[in-house]
Image 1 (cartoon, rainbow, N blue to C red):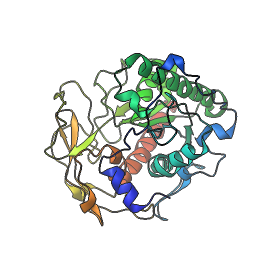
Image 2: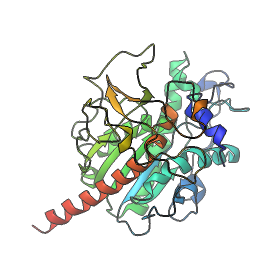
Image 3: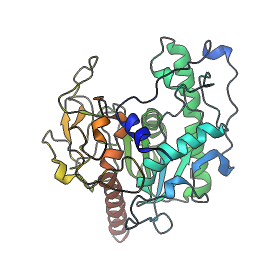
Image 4: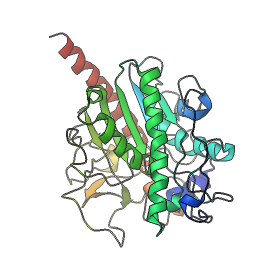
Length: 346
């Protein structure tokens, strides 16, 4: 399990330095073998696995995976971040240590919030090294992202062919997962027959343009379906030094009100964050306000939060609003089912 101090360290924005970087360029490396999605070992979360996405931080929260008619395809963020030995451009999917790290962090703390909406499918994939976002070698980085995306796409296509059976689905992602999620929605869902099955896409932790898709709009209401939400969280009053305000171009949805207005949503609307140990939901941890293409949040307040010194809350994009996102996913599922039942009865 992640320790309280460990998660606070991550929440502070020290999201793993690239202590070890890829050796040489992409073309000079032998890439890890591709995953076989017919094997359960290729999935971090799957209905036939007992995995961390099945956990709930409060025993009163419902797990609807086996009763819902909806699926969730979750694309996890970067966990191949430059630890000892991580010198490839793409991570091996059979690295047991890395997989444990993935499962005990993003699958537990992020993917689990969707088990109140539907069955969770989260593929392991040859994720690009964290340094791919920062390196000057853009060709190697692009190749690494392309390889990672090829796995995500293959996993989704395998899911469609073998598990979907026409069920509605949610696409959910964070950080690198959203880098691939945007492309997946654009190539396979937007304007395609699959769009009719899309409940919503939660594309969190990366900038997403308002017009990223031809037919899938940003969500403007909490029960809207067939749309997408996105946000990136920073401390209120702070913008990154290199940031250029793009509020007229980027889609940002407030995870407390689920609209796109710039009105501050007070922390009283925050139903509960999950930080530290995965055994407690803490309400009122922080507020939320859309500001020039990003989401501002006051410094979170909970036991031990004095340790947070950084102003980038990227690692907590989901965690800080855990229960709000969880309930919203369930609300959108209910709205989708109601709308489609009504349409089917006409």
